[in-house]
Image 1 (tube, rainbow, N blue to C red):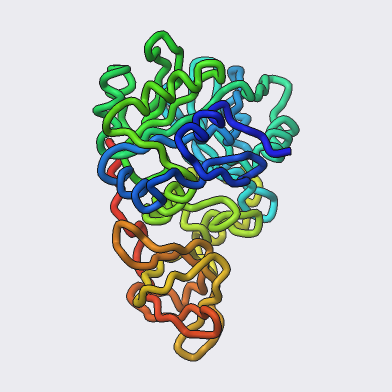
Image 2: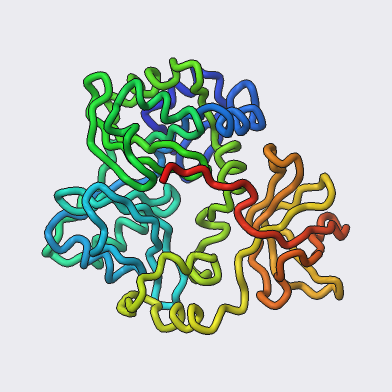
Length: 360
């Protein structure tokens, strides 16, 4: 049985095309289509239902030090009201999941990916000591409000939230509804993520969607937006056999921290480089290259594969991210994607494809 988010009925009212995703019925797109939704988010403000993602708390004085043992990042140095993007790693240096951590007065609030939440919650419960309390938050919905007009909309409802900088968070009240809001998101745009209890979810969503600049955005445009922003997706750029260095996430590693799962392999790659790396690819034709497409060099040698690929509505051409042999992935190099036995030229390019517009 597929699960439903608290906004399921609202999605139907808005004319959404619903599809199965990570065990949930989720909106792929609405009546105006993916390209319209994508460009509306880039130019105005998009509303995303991301309630399928997992939310949990680790509470107690030792919460930060306990979690720091499971990640390569500086969690103990995280100040109250601030966030950090990081990864949980396994003993082989692979990525169990990528997560967002918010430091709150009672400990840590964590957001995990929908497809990983059962394994993540089990893993955290099994590896956090009895000095901390672990609590899932199944009764909380999660929304994202993204785009250049997001702050204008938020200003009408919460001055405290609108005053946040990127990766800061606060507890606030919108029209009598208690919320936890962070200035973050996964589109490359300025914006906010809003956690609210399920009973108020539809009321709050309807309030935001009533604003002229705000339109609902489905999974289709959410994927093209994060791809243009060069942001990794678990199960594509990230998995349990890809290390943070290979994924281009070396910036999450705390200097001097070597007491986390897979540290030997990860720190060796950090010092000496990994054999493969995540890269950007820009299509030289109108033919998109999709996830799993094989990439070859000019000698027809296989050097890697596409991890995510699509048409970029902002650029008007195909873009992709790929995991490639480091020695073949110099910027500007022309490579070839094998699409239906045809060689499609692609150029190695820097990430992101579209500059981030976070409010720092």
